[in-house]
Image 1: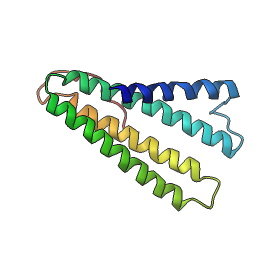
Image 2 (image 1 turned 90 degrees about the horizontal axis):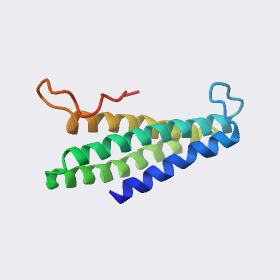
Image 3 (image 1 turned 90 degrees about the vertical axis):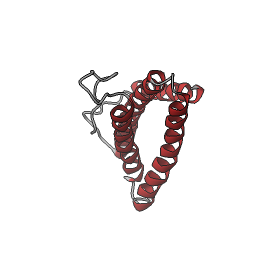
Amino acid sequence: MNKYLLIALVCVSFPTVAAKKGLDCDNLRNTLEIKDCAALTLTSAQDELLKYLTASVEHNKDDPKLVQAIDQAQQDWEVYMKAQCNAVYTQWRDGTIRNVMALDCKTQLTKERTHDIWMHFLTYTDSTPPVLPEPPKN
């Protein structure tokens, strides 16, 4: 679980930096601001993923094999996400939008992963309410 704490600490630090820059993500003026706001969106999605991932491990702590499988799946997903979004970056490598496209890729995949974790590890097959509310897919 220490790796999840490290991810959380990194994610929490970026919004502070952006706030100091005075970013107004509703009134963007250039590609750099678009990239910075896309990074904020990714940070928010990563925070949400961490919340659901931590809850899934805690919820299933009495099943060490399942917790190990969740951890392994997360590690494998991270490898996939990096490879996929690096491919997106490569597709746009000649344009100034390349960073934004890669960040958007990471954000979308992170939101999908969060939803998958919720659906598979934090819900029940009967009418029992889920451990956490359903996260948005998009």
